[in-house]
Amino acid sequence: MTDERLAHVERVAELVVQWAEALGVPDNERHRWLKAVWLHDAMRDAPAEELKQWAPSADGPINLRHGPAAAARAKAEGETDRGVLDAVRYHSIGLTEWDMVGRMLYCADFVEPGRPFDQDKHRELADRLPRDVDGVLREVLQLRVTYMVRSRWPLPEPTVRFWNSLFATSDSD
Image: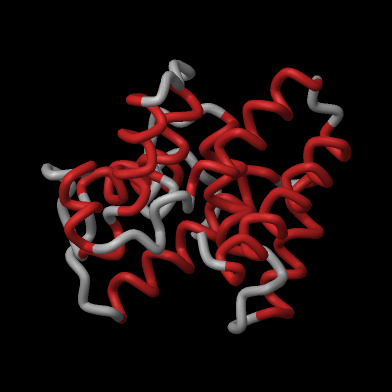
């Protein structure tokens, strides 16, 4: 992991710890959140060949393979917590079946304060999350999908299902 990547992961970890404290999350659950945080970008700076080796069936652009690759490697090295593995695998695209580990990682990875874009919006979302987890999750998903569409990436099927699961049941729009 590069120094820059490590700094990102540390900021994500600080954010989930703040949220866990604000939400009164028990220590064992906070530990799961942090485990996912520390694993999520473990393969982000790996060469394309290594990503393909660990995640040969992952769809989409190569820069979306780091989550599936990190999850596969963590599982090979003994990680058995399905929630942690799913959080790591899908942290860039979303997953309907996530427990809170995945939802917190998905939000924290996107709104952490070191991101160079939309910093005021990210700060507002990070501050609001403990009072409005579902609302912030929907906004983060909307921002991520907008980015994918603008990048002309095909929307992965898990992202479409995640979108439909969150917006079919929401009162917004």
